[in-house]
Length: 351
Image (tube, rainbow, N blue to C red):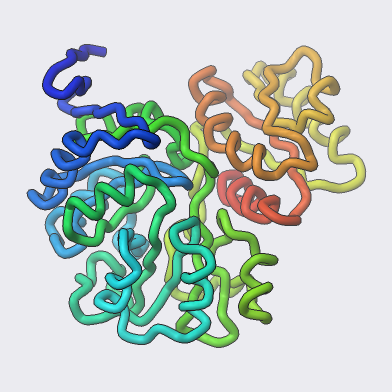
């Protein structure tokens, strides 16, 4: 892949400018160049604490449309608006319940997205024509500085082709979107590795539309009763709820936790091996020695859901690079971040 180094130490790959930035020591010159690109209607991929986002000026409908086009994203799938200051919230939303402010004060900046009634200044293309808007403040110094210097909220879905596993490092963005993004800010691996939790604050009881980096237990601790949305006939109010999300190129088979789980995984693996398929096994560290003779990727310990979350998408992408035909994944428990991990695996396997 052709590349060259140039101004401010950027790397160029097929028309992408890639700035490597240390999140502990922000290079404001590079951030300001990216921020100016946002203001000019260009697209910038940037790290957050969850996954990499693909950002544009939220008020530039033409730039937002480019996001949908290059991702291949359906127009009925709303985007999350990213902000760098809480005060911006009051310009974007017109109805903010007291309970929403409780969550915001506790978890912002952080992996929490709140869905609120939108103000008239938010373009319909951002919200897929809905009267609601999804807003969050990321907990990442590169993202916060980019938004601040851009001087505008940034509309940003994950920086990948629609339906693919979300990107947790700059290379994942390059793999999916080479030549389609104006600037990529490379801030290393993301901290959490799974997307934000999305809470609908426009209806009671409040609903978690997408489990994410903040657990249901943490939200219920502040708000009391909160439901996990299960109404498939409901309109799409949040990113990441359509089927066929997070899917690798390989066929993914999820074997849920329960009696006989490992034996079922072995049976499936042997059957596909007999068919001449290239098999990958995604397994917890406790069970990695039970699949000798197969390609193994260890997601983490059964008792460490944070590590499992951190590794999930990178493992799926790694198997694709190995040209695996079938991935057989060990399901885990639903406690804590386990609920989020299983949500992503179920969607990736078209559960």
